[in-house]
Image (cartoon, rainbow, N blue to C red; front, side, top):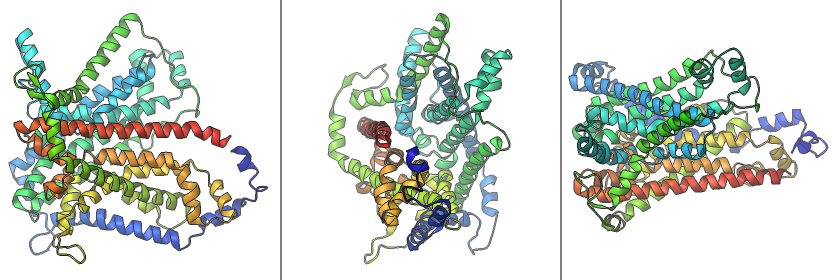
Length: 582
């Protein structure tokens, strides 16, 4: 590869001035792509969210007012909901940190057998919808759950950990701690081992070394994960609803819109508050890091030195890790047992087992599985197409204001699914499909578009990273041999970006497959409902929890298989890349 780039002039590739001219050349194609992407983002992100914000600040006559906010904070139930959402989100970040930080530090800093397996198991909670895990955790940790039955029998007391806001915090912490784990592990692996060695020479050991050197250097990764946990918990709708907790912001917004109506201003006020706090969390995470230097002295140098644990240290470390993994993987075990259980009530394990729940799911909910695959494939495909196009416009052209496409697409990360769905219902109210009388709000198209818009930031980041690894000289070589810009993109860039594109597709697919907030408002009938909606409907009754659990297991299998095959493909791409370059 180096020989190609160093001898580019001899090979007929453009020199630096010609390269700059080629990059700055903007024909009709880039402008057309820019216009189409901008129109898509404006129509399905900016305008719907803008209408939500606008509606919160106008009265019946269309005049500006702050009265709706005064009405919101003047009612005790809304003040309580606001404080509950804030406290649950902060508490979830705290307890998720207690789980993730030691787990990341132990597996990165010390020699562990099965460290990779431990980190992989630690990420599994992400592939299960939190509202599904909530039902399973109630069977295991609830008042009459397996753990409390054993505690009452052996020790004479119970732990009401699944009640009310405490239960919501418990479920959210277990489900979302992998965001902190993944980011923190990556940050710790990038720390230059020379800094740790210098600290050791100066007498820093143990807790002091971690507190003064290692954790501060890994702070960007921690804050990135903590901000994501806060945003996800603050915006979550399904978990509180399944657990019967309605005195939080997201359930209140949902109840106002579905009971009072789409014109209820308080639903929009709640939406604005949710947007504001999501943006605030992400901004504070970036603000804390601003002006501080977390860079290491060298790139690709020695990582943190792994040291061996003593006998007692190994016992304590493995014991703690097994305890944490047992709790975090309890939802998966619980939902699996529930899917096979005929009767499971006031007992440690199910009293009888059956396959009827799976038969029921395949008979009654087969359409939901097909709908999920359709919506998620279309939305993920749309995401990677738009993500690749935005990456190309930003990195390979000089179009003015092209960076705004990145800003607009990334802003979707801070928009709750519930808010986006409310914006769609408001924007497309009364609009019908062309040449028909079918209202747009009753079609599945809006569900698919909501999935695509909310997952676009994930695909965009993957496509940007993939394109940054494709040297521009390869495209210039194709251009010099007579290939058009479109042919170069199709036959050179896209194949070289395949790994990153697939990663973005799978990330969008698996996260869309468990989306509930937007689905609850946009699914107008069961015939167009995806699996997440079906699981929620089943879980509303005790008699339906068996089929709901079976559908949840199928959702986890679909997500798990997608993740596994994507990793296999990416690893194969990495293995063949050196051979291709050679």
